[in-house]
Length: 385
Ligand code: CO8
Image (cartoon, rainbow, N blue to C red):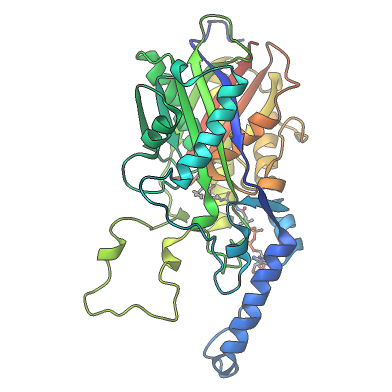
């Protein structure tokens, strides 16, 4: 068993959930209307064999393949509008708080409230997310300004593993002088999702989470989760990819006209080889957790809870089974993807935020996030207060 006193702890977490939710049924109805329209409009090419008809989606398939039943979204109408099939998020003047900063600030305030902390208690802000709204200024600096925090902020992106990497980065900042670090994960995943793609239109939702890290010195004001250790791993893979970037506008040949039939941004959205991801990522994650527990001197049987990344229910069941050597129930490995879908870096933090009250002082849990890159991060925590 782990016996030296950890130097850093989690003081609080926060959550912002958008007000609108879309059920599988609603999403599938919109998708299938689009399929009917497309097939009608292309009837001639389909009959001549020039084009394959598009196939319909199914709510039963979605729940069975992923465990997802619904997802919260920033804009419901735009996604369900067959003519648009993308959230409508109007641009804002530079003088107004950006949407990504806005949802992060809401999650941050929730965390600060539950830890009885004010902006004056925090020295650094990390915005760790899969999709950052712009190149610069950093979203973290805007969040810092909006909350009135002195010190500094910066953005980082390690896809779905961003929160675990953000916790590790925050621990480093505290070791080099910061008293407390606010680490936020605003994820507007629906904005990079291709709602016309049958294989992936159901995968993502929107949310923001926040974690406050502090030195493990004085007794915590409210809660305290000592960090026994964190372990990170990346392994290059093209199986989850999004080519959106600042070079896109320079890529088209000078005389190449945009194809009006094609959504010009389709290849700049999320895409994946879901089956390959599933097969390749399960062993990487279960091995990393097993090694991390061994290095930390914690037996798998002593882990009370696994707050895992929320991408796919059976994936999490496989991971927990490999680590424990038996099936885990939904108390040991809680599920939030049924309501939230995949929220990228925020998923494991939502699970931790919502499913930790019953953990007793001295008990241990593992927060583990994984995703594109591939990237994996495990954080072992012990309840201290
Ligand atoms: N409705 C009905 N049938 C369908 C549908 C649909 N919507 N989609 C596919 N089918 C059919 C297929 O055509 C196929 O039919 P057939 O057998 O006749 O060919 C059949 O269903 C099976 O298809 P699949 O093999 O694709 O289905 P799977 O069982 O593999 O399930 C999943 C698909 C759910 C995608 C699954 O593979 C999965 O979840 N894999 C893991 C994915 C994962 O974890 N990805 C990581 C996500 S990304 C991430 O975490 C970070 C990325 C950075 C993100 C930025 C975020 C904003």
